[in-house]
Amino acid sequence: MTTLRMRTRPVTSWMLPRSTLLRHLLLAALAGAGLFAVTGVLEPFRNYQLATVAAYLCATAGLTVLTGLNGQLSLGHGALMATGAYTVALSQNALADADRLGGGYLLLSLALGVAVTVVAGTVIGTAAARLRGPYLAGVTLAVAVVVPALTTTFRGVLNSEQGLPVYLAPAPEALGPYFPYERWQAWIAVTGALLTLVLLSNLLRSRFGRNLRAVRDDEVAARLAGIHVGRTQVLAFVVSAGCAGLGGGLLAVLAQSVSPGAFSLTLSLYLLMAIVIGGLGSLAGALWGALLLVALPASTHLVTDLFQPSAAVAQRLDGNLSLAIFGVTLVVVMIAAPGGVQGLLRRVGRSVGARWRVPTGR
Image (cartoon, rainbow, N blue to C red; front, side, top):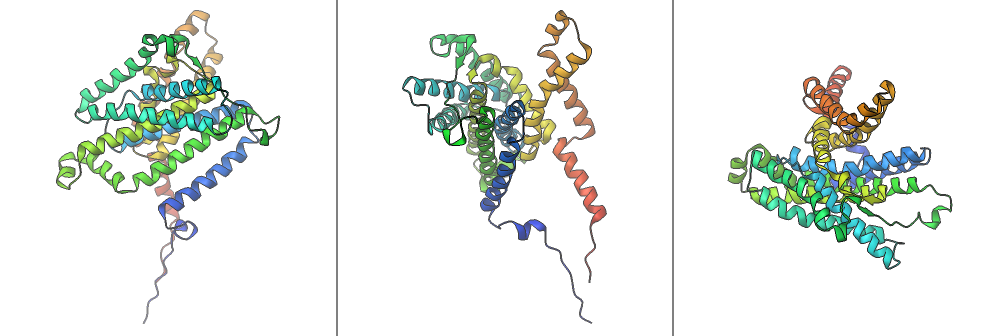
């Protein structure tokens, strides 16, 4: 008797293109269309928060590639974001002096911010590739301290602690005279984040992505397999630095100013804790981490409004409360879900899928 086997094809296998690039572009286009539609119904402040999440996502996605997928610990990504932000500020101010703020000049400034940060990442990555463990963390920690200090050393250009303004053109006239500027900022940041995710997603599914994981898992085995470990580590740092530079440039566009206080060592710690809480080694985890980076300040305001401390206590809590809440969240997540938020969701999804899986007929 002939037996017939019924196999169900995954939904993505027939709904999405087989090409990885086309599939990622289609998903990014769908996500972009949905987010652009959502910005039309959000308040200006919520649009600003959405744009901030997108800017942080660029940095957390890049740090995920470096730390989660290549195993290099970085405590200096806040400084790399500052490099991109100050480059965008200087570029935009120079363009404003030349009356060149319209058109695609902002895109040029952001590209320049990424390029300068890539150069800085190449220098730091070359040194970092020779170090391991606490020595690597020490080098990146030094970067996090030195880069903001350069604003005081070159105060004539970088204006010390006061920082620099960022001159920006208004939203394009084609969008209408009353188009909310916060929505335009959200469009810019979301576009940058989606492009970053598309590029990283394709990169991680390439041979280079496989090399990253091989070096992370076992450097000796990777060398025996013919992988150039040092070159792979430097390239990982370069890619991660470029993403951080774009994130810093977008933050400069959103705040319309840059200052060393916005890119302190605390930001580098926040970025590292965010990718761990979100799910180390996953771009989806980087998204959860970016959401947490924006939701954290709101939670601290809720706590202070709830308890209404005195002015002296509120001053002591300022800055420290956010770090404390982040630390407590990290401890709770590591105990309850060692794989982070994304790891927990995967586990729940597998559990639900196992219960609802329909057995194949014969």
